[in-house]
Image 1 (cartoon, rainbow, N blue to C red):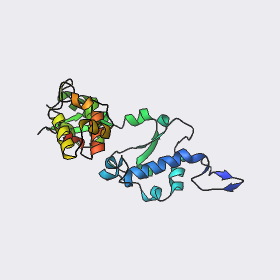
Image 2: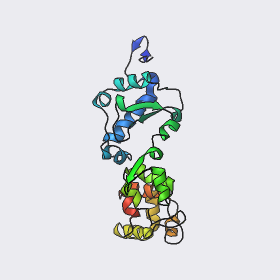
Image 3: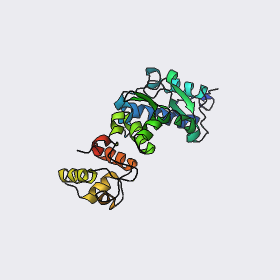
Image 4: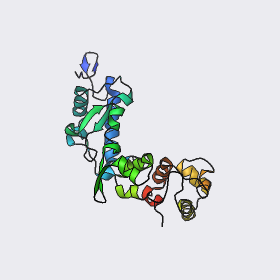
Length: 227
């Protein structure tokens, strides 16, 4: 049962007291949906994900719903998350639930049904049929929401190959922006000397590709596209 924070026998604002963690979650949800400066905006607000007016305009309404539906301020973050039931819809009482990270994972790509090439398959089965690393494909799909983006991997990178032309794109970006390769690595937060290896036998991980996309503002699909 929800109890509004008290101080000296008097009610205080919803920002105070024992609900700081929940208030932080509320701010984070609004930020990813409406703040263009948020590093997560393009995966939420940029894709049309919104917060219902009731929650966006009132922390009290959001807090009441969360606490009445099982949100535990004292639980570790991974045991108590706010999950959207339908990943294509926004944050609202009828589309959200309180779950653990393990339960939230069941709402991810492995359970998504793909309709492609006249066939209906799970996303994992689709990846196997196209000889793609499920982990890499899932990373792209979750960040872009686009099967076409995942398709850029088909035939371009096997489990032990490279992304053709990737290092050349890095060089072109550096030339255009007057950067050294070392400067590019610092910009993207990757290790010194790592980028040069992409022109040889190794390939960047999808995590690294996504970091590069975030740092440069160029979509991961463009970095992966082989011209």
